[in-house]
Length: 442
Image 1 (spheres, rainbow, N blue to C red):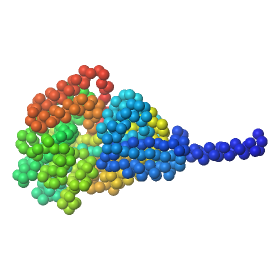
Image 2 (image 1 turned 90 degrees about the vertical axis):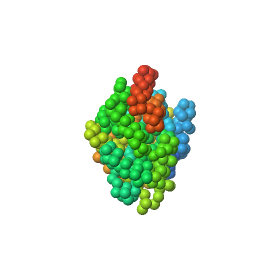
Image 3 (image 1 turned 90 degrees about the horizontal axis):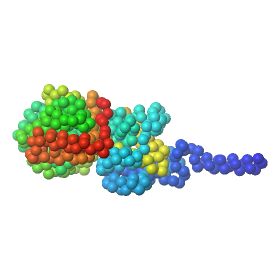
Image 4 (image 1 turned 60 degrees about the vertical axis):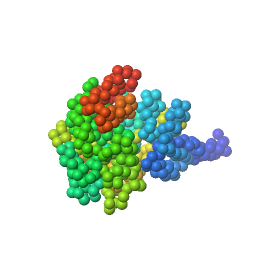
């Protein structure tokens, strides 16, 4: 090889290196674009747009296109069918995730999770809260990843309770006693999001079934164990809901209220307590009175005085992210998600958006006041659970909501209510075409 040809070869290698030697294997070639499609809900997408710009600066040659829509799932479904999905997606609450998994549309992420975290310190999997990570697992593989998470419970206004000398109830008997006092003060004790009965399934029924029968009662129901939905624990929980209705402790007209309408009743002080997740603050932030007049505080659903269930149990929920199998730049999509879930970015999300994150240690950020009690409840919970059957078996989810509406408006007795749930579960059991899931051990 002549000296001139050797210099030409070196020059060619240097040119190639300038375009790609600094990137990780599998990252896109210079000039290509990695697409990130997001649900544009209460938390917006500005955090992710800013993170994309930061990532681009750290990885020259990479370009990220971040976009969002309040109904992004409607735009993503045809793209999954056509085989042209984005590289990374947060498909939002309206997406049926599990059919995507069954159809092979979602990348298993076990190998990526076994690799290093974004900062190179430790294994990526170990940075997540395990109880949240398992919600994205199926058939022994990890298909979906959590980002932020919600904690379900009940809320009251500290100022209203202090004015009347009330205390948040810890037990059902304390709840009944408190409701009498609140009602006597001319305030509705409890309101709820009647147009969306899943709020009451999560806020009333399932916590009280756990209190009456232990977490196994709800695990059995979600696992479709015959008889579980009409077990004594579920029947007792239904009777507790009915007792509150019969004694006039629910706000009149709540059955016809949307989530924001009922939450406005709570914020305005016309109702004293409401079941809801930790998204309540961000959802109502524009309507909240000044802090010197209103301060929403979280508490766990009151438990039975002598119930066998764990009184520290906490219900959580996630809206997972996925890496589509047919995305063009999976490695970079995964690496960008590693960046988003690094501890510094997780703490930033907590502080900027006022919600809890799935990353260990992120609760050490400066929490907004309304998150302090939920974070404490999560840390101290001996049992963490989630409503999974709604995504696993949508027909059962719809049936349970319809039955809850019937229980609350008096069209179904507690006995009829649990029988309706059991009948709906039996239909799923008999349908061998429906893929089966099992609740992961607690």
